[in-house]
Length: 446
Image (tube, rainbow, N blue to C red; front, side):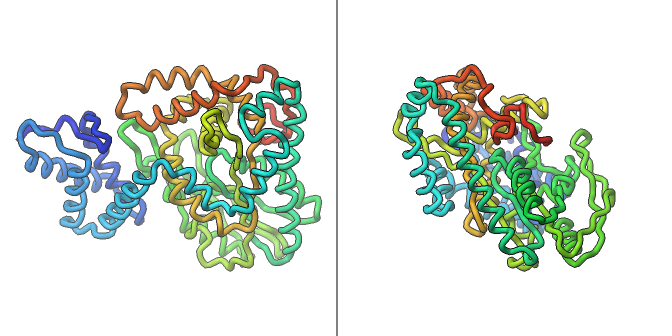
């Protein structure tokens, strides 16, 4: 019985065997059903490795599927039925999604009401930015300022509509949620929406759900030491839900405080209580996720979903992917405001995409309104800022089987940005532009 040194991935690539991948997968499944004992996951992983070594012939290399089969068996034998079920369901879902890999963005679009997509498409056609060629042509004619003004006006019109809808239900709504995937522009949208509602005489009380993160040491990690903040299970959903019920009932609660520098949460830090006419305002990735709002009457909630629903075709005739826009936005924001290396953002993005496909996008149709945060003028901005880096990443990951996801994204975005005319002078982008949330220079405090 020899130690396992390599494993065959589904793509056929042979990569180094890493026991931590097994323990992390088990821990992730346990977290999804409420378990947070990492030592148990590590012990179970040890059993999996022992069983794998016992059944693998000398000189043979096991496959990922064989390892996952053993994980299921070990979990069930050790009495972890709920974790085993979560693991099996997640494995089955991953298999189905791999089969539909090329359809991911089409699947996302199906969750957006087609009326909204058609509206954005019509806008793009009417304003001459439906293709990269059209965008470049307008740039060449010196029309960048006009593109900015037209794009910002369309985005702000969506927010005004949302404010009007909330105002019409004044006295009924107790919670307003701004939800959407990473880097869709939730923060700026929340600020703009708040300002409009205050002008309408409404009083909002923000609730920062980031303070409800569990301690960082309790989050799942991968073999690269990367923590997964993107899953809703990283938040204490039960405590959020309890506090929301109490606040709506007029009770006083003590909000926790999460220190991102230390990765630790302190309970019962900040008192909070709302008046009978106040509205709780929540800006959250997972504002649409069921357990957060469980038991709260839908009549008392207003949900706004935001995403950059860009309708621009590249030179290959395919629409530019919304997830690629958000990835570039996050790279800029994290580098500017969080001293986070853009390359790490790229390598982490598979967590972001996995979580939003499971926990955010499927609930789009449960919202009251949708805001399109796509700004056609961000493409030339990102071309100037990021093109050379994507060139380098596409080359760096070319022969790294462990970074296939990063390679695929780097190549696709590199090719797209190569076709866009760069913008050297960002001075025409106003301080209240949503894009300033990501590139800096905003008039808002984040």
